[in-house]
Amino acid sequence: MQYLYGMDKLKNKQAITKFNIQELFSPVKSFIMRIIIFNHWVLAGLLAIYLSACSGNRTEPSYTAARVDSLHKAFAQYIEEKNKQFKTADWSPLKQEDKGHFKGLNYYPYDESFRFRGAIKRYDRPDSITVLGTREGDLRPALRFGYFEFQIDDKTQRLEIIKILPRHPGGSAHLFLGFWDATSGVDTYAGGRYVDIGENDQDSYVIDFNYAYNPYCAYNERYSCAIPPLENRLEIALTCGEKNFKDH
Image 1 (cartoon, rainbow, N blue to C red):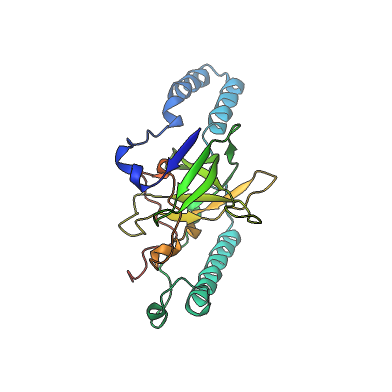
Image 2: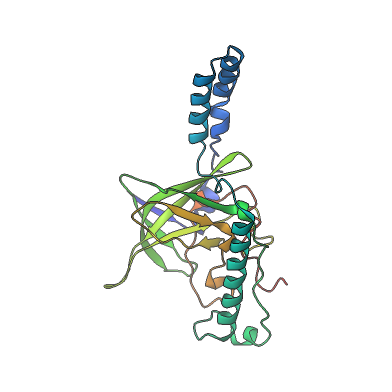
């Protein structure tokens, strides 16, 4: 089947129903409590493990102080290097007039609770789709690759992962994770933000939303940027990653 993703479909789409797996298993929780009362500890433990396993990808289970310090330092180095490249590199998307007084991009402070590790659940028969760009006529062939689920405040969130195919001979395909959240159009770019993902054979991914960034069209209208899938409109606020340009 062929699908079309883009802004012109927004008005025709109903709000996406959020699936809360914790609510689904609330009867199981109650059953566990009854088992505990009757001292069937082994079965209760097995049910608790099952419930935990069904709740999607979570943040990494624990961070030592050294690990947290390492994550913060790596993020600071990334921002420092990105700011340097944006100001001086030939490929920088900034307009020439913006480079002159550019002092750095605006990011939320690093928060390790927005860092998730887990698998992308692949579709057995990925649908062919067309991803729209922000410029008229920009049509990008793609496949529905899979989806990534993660937990925030004990609620399951889900984002579609798209595989954008090459449009020209010799080009390469790449995974695309673009999304909107409750900060979009307020503190962050209204057109959504991206997180880079490199496909791997182990099917183990780290999705760190602290590295969510603005597409180039957020800095310069001469660029055409891929529009995220409509399904990737999160109701929650991801208060991490890059903020609006020129709002600081």
